[in-house]
Image (cartoon, rainbow over all chains, first blue to last red; front, side, top):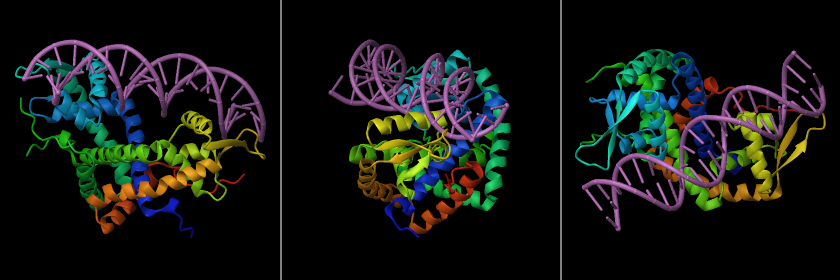
Length: 159
Length: 159
DNA sequence: CAAGATTGAGCCCTCAATCTTA
DNA sequence: TAAGATTGAGGGCTCAATCTTG
């Protein structure tokens, strides 16, 4: 065996994480586009809005959750607003800020999309890992995520 | 607890995978740029070339391994060639194909970069997971990767 | 005609600068 | 002055079309 630094275990682990993530992401996005006409990006934003009680999130919070810069989120919401799936509302107590709010059309679109998408995940991830393994993976990834992307945890944003 | 479809376990698992991957990727890329002036993309390509016995790989194989389209790889190699880190060589037995070959400058650049990068991985991943957990994560991700991104496994490309 | 690689067009993201409000 | 959001400029990726060789 060649024991040089290019085959280091830690390098391999990170490589595996990036590869499986982008591989799975591509597979799922293709299906998502076919089934629901939503990009992975749109799906993520719409789900995060749908999860909140009022179907709304501050632009800055949503940017953190969606792993996007404020700039990137602004343009993403522009496109979703053009499509009628989201609208902006200004924050009454802080006039600098705005909310992204799920529209009725957006809610029905994401509601229709989520079922088939979960089936697709089941098909790809379920073929690779058992239920127990998925649970283990989830808890490991959660630990990693908490150390590596601060702010990704929803928390409660009052306003 | 709200038991609606938007909080489904399977959705969460995929979300966690994408978040931890992009979070870790950003963290590491920032350090990599500071320390070695290499993007994550360049690092990956150079490492894959450095790993092979002859320091060379077919364009199409490298594209698969780097999770890039042939088009994307062509442009990436263009930039690496401009920088003098990689050169192209034509394949003598199949005149349609080319190799990307690591230059001497490329080899010394990636050799210098890999040590600090591994330290960075240690610092971020090591802070989140124990050695045992990392091993478990690696084996789970390998299973997932094998089901989800075919062709990512090196194999031997003869020519 | 199929396969390997490249080129042109278009999309989306990031960084830096800007504007408004706290 | 800082924070939230947006805009302009620039870079990199993908898709579709093209060229060459098998």
